[in-house]
Image (cartoon, rainbow over all chains, first blue to last red; front, side, top):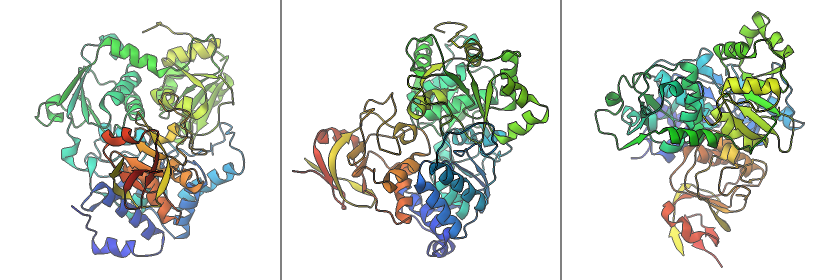
Length: 417
Length: 137
């Protein structure tokens, strides 16, 4: 089955401008994936504006020079700089200027200045069943699983190429048959009090990702909708430890009114019965720090914190000053709300470092500290912090993170749980 | 020892020591884009460099920025000499597709069953522009 482009698509691809470059990238990807055609998309979320080196900046500027513009609504994922000036990014010249040029180039292409990895909580929520092209692994998995819109895991550069051409290869999760679950991830053997806890979702997500790889699974045994922030944490952790693009949770997510529907009426190929031991081991794996009597920083907000998560942070802090800073990463959609009634200033006065437009694992914000220990409640931060920041990670709940930040040493409410 | 890989993305033929990864890797967060060193502390080959190697990838996981990391390695001259993948990974290989659009020279990427990877371990390997994979010397 080879790729057939329409005459319009062929004409665009044959040009010399930015639109031509975008169409050729989409078409070459389609050919690589064995897609028979391109299909129109309703929106895009662009992960390509994060500076990893000069090559990405040069690519974006080449598109701008070629007069390219996005054809559909396109939000931007995090960049490498905090343009709101909340936190200090220690990116030195010439990298700093290249990162800024990159962010500017994506603005010129017509993308919205959302700068968040949680666009779905910033008003970008494509309708159920629509085809979109989203990048950023946590946004992809949320878009597919919780919103029921259809996207593959778009890599950097294909996302913007799809946004400019307004098209995407017809393959993978755009096709309904491929959205069917083939395995069951049964959590019914876990204690209800664990499932009701905050850490259940990032820990289970991390386990789920490692167990299923890139398969589509349905989680069973969940008796109550854990809420959007929990689903966000589950998906982000699963997409960090595995290649998860879509999950279902029976009676919670829109394509899984029940397990049988998610499975398409076919018996599961595999059933994973999750035991309390598996959870203990998955939770332990999130930490890389050896026994320690101090922490150097706390980071929360991967994916970016919602307003409800800031409410929880304020409740747990209860006006106490922090001995070590909590880096709270979020987007402008929440920052505006926090600024409106002085909450941001109050948090900052207690030692919280608000990080906007970016986050602590994608750009240097944490102080360079050999042997530094970072505590987090995020499965995604736990996964990426050691490689990207050099800090060892201690994983705990938000309550543990707050108590530890107040005292400056690791505090766990329930050791080993 | 030789095998024939299916061309995934055409590019420059390459020769170098084989680096057979024993676990899937996320390029973003797993590989330092400035040097090509494997930085994921949980990865079994952590500390080794993929730069200049014939890189055998049993699978890829994680972030959708893998393409950006690979393209940066290409642009900065730290790319693997060639890539051998068990299956086409659109996210990773996009780094090569876009680099080609930019007019930069990219290493060839081919597809080969991962069961045959181990035969190349520790050897000097050459991957031709036609997808031929052979132990050299």
